[in-house]
Length: 87
Image 1 (cartoon, rainbow, N blue to C red):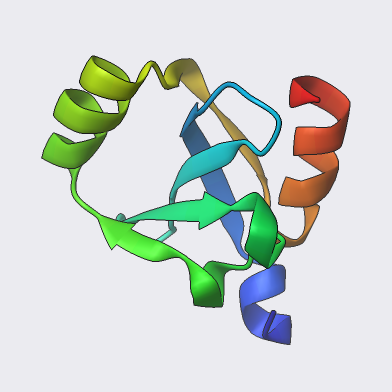
Image 2 (cartoon, rainbow, N blue to C red):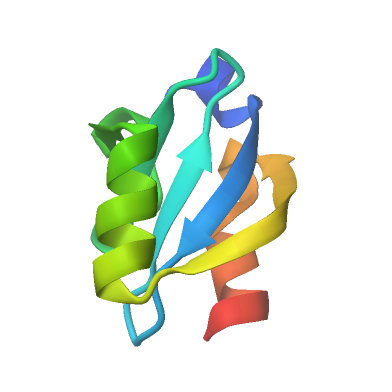
């Protein structure tokens, strides 16, 4: 992960249940990214997603758990968050 992106504060908006959780995070710029266990939750390897996709597909169809309120953390701490809270 690039150093400047690793220090960014992101908001975890949702996560998928399971052995290899997927996180949907909101970037400081307001964009959303789906981040994956397999890539170490690296922002640079995330998939850009839209708010509609989050609500209708991830939460609506695939049983992602919405974080209300979102959890704010450093991008570099996302893997630690998953290990502590989801696995």
